[in-house]
Length: 214
Image 1 (cartoon, helix red, strand yellow):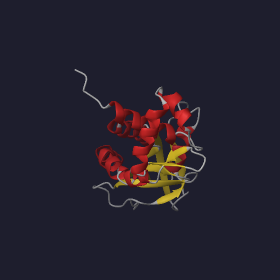
Image 2: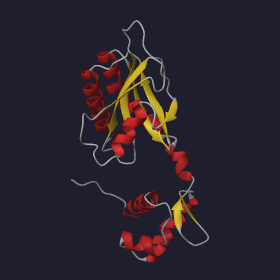
Image 3: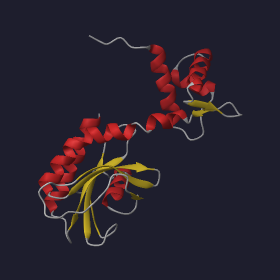
Image 4: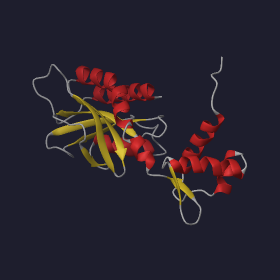
């Protein structure tokens, strides 16, 4: 049995998605054509979304995503963290290294969930909220690799050594197939070389987290 849905809410969400996919905004006419509804409906949708600061219109009449979405966005990280923790715990315990989920935040990589192994004598300290450029460290490089056209080629993971911390090596795999989220799952360890099996294991963990978020 198909659940009953709200057509108006569906259209409003589609407006937000369309606006989120453009940098220059959309006019009422453009939205009307893409939604397949008349301009009056679009005006009403935009007026409602503007009241909640989810949409703004510039002097030229083009609609853009409003600052209100930032308040909603701040609640995303805790939800993502909660969904990722089981896979990260399993990864950390099996590999014996600090596991992390990292998301793209502009030009930075931001660690939003970290799990340390419980049985090791020592491990790399890595804190939630740690950020670094996307082009440094396994976590960021894996996110960039996930953007590339040849992301399905090669081993599926990225290895680095000493890029963020002297003596530490990292392995990370891009988290693919989650709408609206760019991220990677990986581990960081005090080692000169990352064992090959660790690379394969982070790929599996990245798939687990992606499945949990779909």
